[in-house]
Length: 381
Ligand SMILES: [Zn+2]
Ligand SMILES: [Zn+2]
Image 1: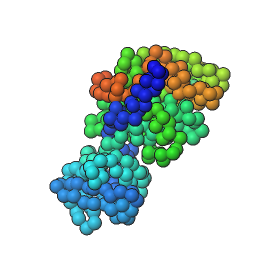
Image 2: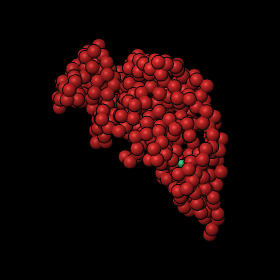
Image 3: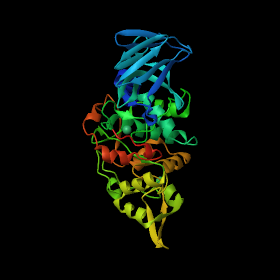
Image 4: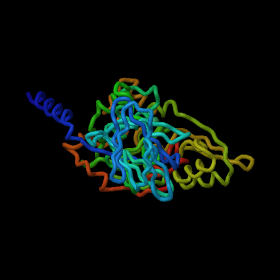
């Protein structure tokens, strides 16, 4: 009876959209420093654009795009023969809610999004900011951050990590909560509803990692080299969760090993820990020094590094999580292994969702924490 009541309570929580209704504001496509962007409607829904007191309708499936470009310090909206100078542009569905649309930076990229769009001009660039449902953002981050061979339970662990970050991270940009690069969390298009990443987000809907009842901005890296690290190990400041160094069985038995040769000048930078490693990577290119876990020796005026692992090695190890899932481990087991003493709680009912404002980490440290594949494109805001 008790079990049934608990089950019903749980179902009521996960079926109640208000329990976890939360949006995140994501600044997108800043990597391309756009001076122009184009918006097109999807095949199914009209997009309503509002600018300077006027309203325009982009019909579903219409090949006609609305273009926003920089004109001095303002935006020039160009749509269907109308030319309008404005400071901001809003786009949404007919009911003012989320809508699907395509955004293009001409000559660079076209991406599909779902949410409401706000566009402004800043420092000579078009800045598109999408307010999207938290769960859409989680699914989009999971698909962007996971390999295609990641098993479902490891994807679920990644979804909880991504959600925890969106809920408790942030505060590193002025006009929006997160960018779409690894500086915050890498984000692509929302995946199809039946894709493994979308299923992983749905099946963990609302679940976040908490410490002392507060969500924390959970970290992950691609492989740990045998043992995960703590922020202090790599010269990073602490955060809302005291990370532990845990044994990662798969990486311990089969570490991802690497060898690199550097000038002694570059190698000297590595003494600064993670910030030094990223400084070398910014100089020499991505993957110049894959991790902070290495031994070094001098040879012929050069330094040879022999190391293991990829990334900062803090928190969830994606390689170890995959191995645990391949052996039948569930996402709860994976998360409790890599985040000892953390609890999984359902957002909204058990956890205040305003945690993101409580403890924004300093930008300098966070730009290191999330640096990875695209750290060379770190936002400077
Ligand atoms: Zn960012
Ligand atoms: Zn590992």
